[in-house]
Amino acid sequence: MAYTIGDLVEHSVDRVPDREVLVQGDRVLTFRELEDRANRLAHHLQSVGVAHDDKVAVYSRNTIEAVESMVAIFKIRGVMVNINYRYVPAELEYLLNNSDSLVVVVERRYCGVLAEALPKAPGVAHVVVVEDGTDTPDPATPEGVTVSHYDDALAAQSPERDFGERSNDDIYMLYTGGTTGAPKGVMWRQEDVFMVLGGGIDFLTGEKVTSEWELADKAVDGGVLVRAALPPLIHGGAQWAILMALFAGHTSVLVPEFDAETVWQTITDRKINLLFITGDAMARPMIEAWDPEKYDASGLLYIGSSAALLSPSVKDQFVEAFPNLMLSDAIGSSETGFSGLSTAGKGTNHTGGPRVMIDGETTVLDDDGNEIEPGSPVIGKVARTGHIPLGYYKDEAKTAETFRTYNGKRYSIPGDDARVEADGTVTMLGRGSVSINTGGEKVHPEEVEAALKSHPDVYDALVLGVPDERMGQKVAAVLHTRDGRVPSVDEVNEYARREIAGYKCPRALWVETAVKRNPAGKPDYRWAAEIAASRPADASKEIRK
Image 1 (cartoon, rainbow, N blue to C red):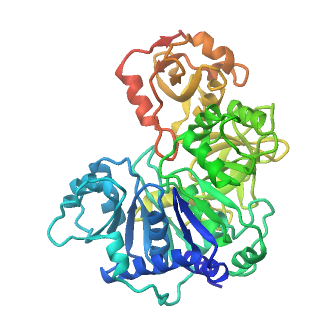
Image 2 (image 1 turned 90 degrees about the horizontal axis):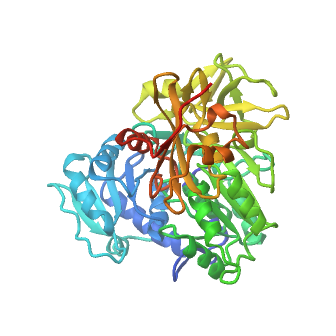
Image 3 (image 1 turned 90 degrees about the vertical axis):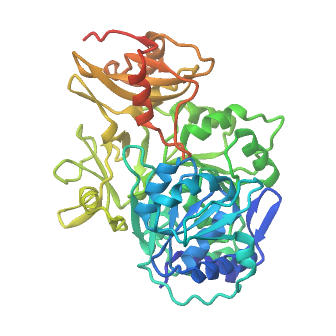
């Protein structure tokens, strides 16, 4: 069976060709029109030298052309490279070189940054410029690098589907956000990533599809769901939310840039049923912009968050406003895909961190690679077996560190700490690489951040460890407060102590106009450390034990 991205999309095209598939503003495409345009782009990419396993970078916001580019690349067995559109030239140069990108598909607004990076990215041979309403010039290119315009390229090519057979071993690659180091390309077999992220294994029931046509066949007589993935397509969760919709014959609404009021208006206008977001970075401004007198969310059935978990206070606000809505947190990473899920209920007891039910291929291992028993006080690492990546692109050392074999099983262990509760659920404690050691006690930023955001004036927070002569490190926080006011340490911790122990509470605070996160909503802890090192704390308190 061909569980490849190209085949699965084509099955939906064949089953429901006249159904709407992509919506962006006033633009609407059917599956048939997507097929025509993606085939034309695929032929153009072939004409400039893209072959099996060649890398094509997509440097774009969430647009119809970005999705068409994804599909076209997979049709010809190429490998897509996700580009963070906030990169400065040096960061872009690194990614183009590290990924060995041959072609860049770029929105016109980013051509200036690309032009600065291209002289130091000798592997790039061709650039495809997508019009976006801006007037940035075509990028100046080094000798030998050609430039074409997206619509012209499509017009010159055939719409035929004549790409030959694909393999389940074809590669899907996803570059990590690089929040704690340089971005790395995580390489998956397409069959494996389809199983864990594309609907090959049902997230709720654990049942596996029995045929490559199963999802497309269900689309013929099944209801059409209107979906919207709000995180940028640089984020794997957004890519797979859209790919799942393609495989299942559903409609995806694209919002190029996140804005809470625009999102609610789009939900109202397009009657969106399923919404995918990234943690508090999207959920908090959305719930604060919600106005039942202005917007209609009666069609909204489900909101799913991934990549950054929702804080309890935000969950409670959503449950209060939408009592019939299903709200979930999914855990996972670029190295594991989907690993578990929790659903929100008002007033749920908190255990110091988000609590989820893990799936059948996920477990928590101790330092010796043994599964931790429910109820054990031992903190271990979340690990996934079964359908997992091959490793990191061009990084054997990091591959060996993350993908390990214990007791005859190969696991992906990206470094997330967790505790297994007595009922078998798992409390997520955050990435161990950013944990804080204060006087021998280990503190995980994620659980402290959730507690701090229960304070009504704390809009966002990043927690980090800063040097302390007595304790080695002390817990500190960079806050975004609603009115820019600097609260006292005692005032903030009065709320935090309701959910976490006293030794986990911050002893130093910095207040900024915004907390820096990447476009997918993930925290930038390096930025927080730079803020803490740049000036004395805005509020602090001596540690007493």
